Length: 198
Image (cartoon, rainbow, N blue to C red; front, side, top):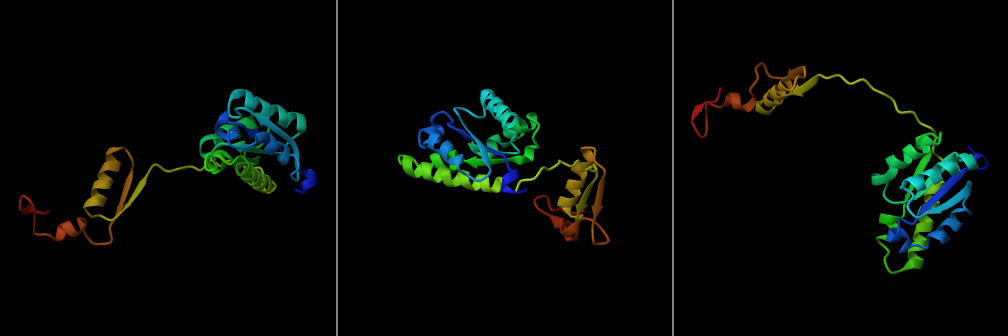
C-alpha cells in the first residue's frame, strides 16, 4: 500500500497527568499531523476510557481511517482494549499500532518537558512508520488434542504420567530403556528407610 492510500489516525492520550504532566501532548498531536499518511490527529484526556474509545471509532468512520496509532500507555495493559475498539468500528484489529509514551517516555524523563516531548515525537514517528507495514490478519483456530506425551520413564516421568492420567488426559509414556524406573530402578536400597527401591 502506498502512502497515498494510507489513512492513518493518531490518538494522543494525556493519561491525566501521567503523560501530560511530562509531555506537551498538544505539541505532540500537532507534530503527528505532519507525518506521512496521517489524516487525523486527536488528543484525549483518557483514551482507554469509553469516551476516548468512542472518539477513536467516530474518527475511523468520519475520516475513513485504515490504520490507527494510539500514543498512550503500555500495550501490555491496553492493546487488547484498543484492538477491540477498532474492530468495533469495522477495522481489522491488526491495523492498530501502539506508541508507548508513558512507560517509555514520560515516566523515564521526569522534570525535562522539552526532552520528554522530543522523545515522544520520536516514538510516535516510529509507530506511524510501522503502521505503514501493517496488514489485516485473521485469527486461526487450531484444534488441540487432549492427549499428553511424557518422554522418560524415570521417577519424574512416571509421576507426571500419573498426574496427567488422574486429571483425565490420555497419556503416552515413552522410555528408551527396556524397563521403566530410571536410575531409581538401579539402586538396591533407598534412604531414609533403607527399603528396596523397586
